[in-house]
Length: 130
Image (cartoon, rainbow, N blue to C red; front, side, top):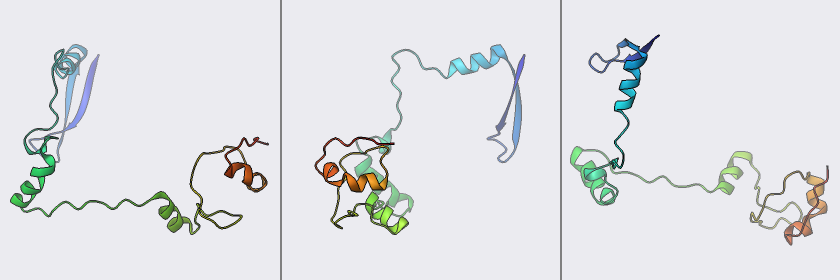
């Protein structure tokens, strides 16, 4: 039984080739990719090493003419949901005060939340009613 692999050719960019391998040849090629026992894999080296990437990466970017890396501003979940849904999920439906997430109660409907609002606020047991 032969395996036919379809892959992009590096030498002629944009062209694809077929490679016909027997079971034994395919297994031998896969085994070559397995490192020796106790072999330490190096992911990044030089200026990308974890130890120096913070100091040297900006210098390398300037040397090759790339713009400086801009950190993305993190948007909190409350602000994201408020802009997307148009409703502040962390404002209380009873008093309008600001709520903070403490736990998730599965299976309660809106009417049951209103009935048990005081128990939920005091973090007491709320029975899940069907």
